[in-house]
Amino acid sequence: MEPACVFTINRSTGSQLELANPPGLMATRHSGLSFDDGNLAVLAGDSFFLVHQGLIARHSAPIDSAIKQLYLHGPPAHFLEGRPVLHLDDPPNDMLLFLLAIYDGVSSVSYDKHGFADAAAVLRLATKYEVKHLRADILRGLSFYWPTDLDQWDLRESEAEIDIGVYVAKDRYPNPIMVVTLARAVNAPELLPSAFYDLSRAPPSTIAAGYSRPGSSEVHRLSPVDLMNLFKGREHASRFLSTFIVNELEGRKPPAACACARTGHRACQVTFEAITFGVLHQINGAGSIRGSDPLHAILDLESQSNRDFIAGEEVYKACESCREEFSGLVESAREDFWHKLPQWFGVESELPSW
Image (cartoon, rainbow, N blue to C red; front, side, top):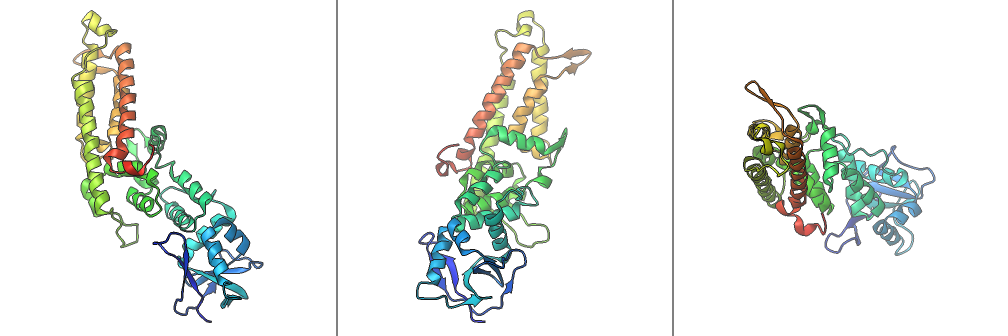
């Protein structure tokens, strides 16, 4: 069999496809996706897929251009099973997932730890070949776990806490290093702030060491610039929490409506002193991701303010006015924290809105 022509994306000129001549290879019809009535053989690696020219070309302008180049100087020069050959320089499995998505959509795609690699493959090729609706669909799916909205982040986090204090995000969600790498590769900066924040909760040594998939020796690491920005963002987040503790807990002044302030009772003072001690113990705890999670720590303060605290033989609980005021402070602080993420992690200029 004569070598087919390869069409590759020219990165310097955008989506223009260039013709190249690879060495000869033997190709096998891929059993995962081939139609007997297909009129185009898409060759990827050592596998080819029999597909429908019109359908593929309709979804992708670069592939449409490449198909037209096959006929530029007359009939195509190379055929497989009687169909003209379009050779695309992508791994066969990635091409299979991409073509399946074009034909069947992405409703079966999973975005959790186990399905992320497939979702990433579709997104990379949808971006490369400018299949805009597939790109939008995959990004929408990824945004459930890597959102731009604080409420969605809280929902994500609640789903990863299967019991009080039992946090299983590591077992459920993809490693955020992989998400940052993907976002950079496909120009999806909207995924970066939440992915950076998620990663910033890990120990610095773990972040710097990178990530390897189980069974793989390949190590995925952040670029030097992203790694530096992550550590800077981590420090900003830590300082925000420290400032909140100093201003709203240690330096707390009771509101005018505080029942304890009017009666001289110490319930509110004891409650917030106990909360301060508890949060300091939590953020200084070793080995827990929650110990370096300011968003969670601040949210947890609100639930703590509704607890009963025992000091000696007395039971103390903050009055309703103090609890309501503090709840408002927590909500405002967390919104402020969330909106600062792009600035802290050095991606503010890449996001027109957040």
